[in-house]
Length: 121
Image 1 (tube, rainbow, N blue to C red):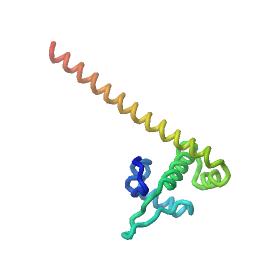
Image 2: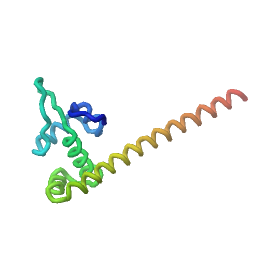
Image 3: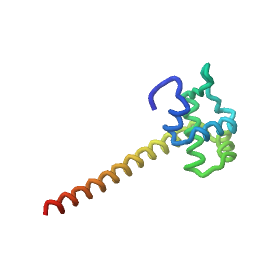
């Protein structure tokens, strides 16, 4: 993510791979998550909000906690440790997505080369 003071819900949704309705729902479930509002009522997330969401996604998707379980872990676990784990999980998922995209492109390239060779014969 670009280094900005505030991020829109669309930017956060795209960056984290979570739908906008899910982000709105989580606002109701977690008091800690309360993005600022612009004069037009648009949500403006801070870096801290995004970090909190990364921890939440890490706990629910990667660790398999329910929302209630994630709330409990966030209350009791070392915040710095959870943040580091969440950042690592997101970095690894980005690398995984990049490698899968490369694999797909290589397969497509191999198929094109085979088709070109067959046409030339």
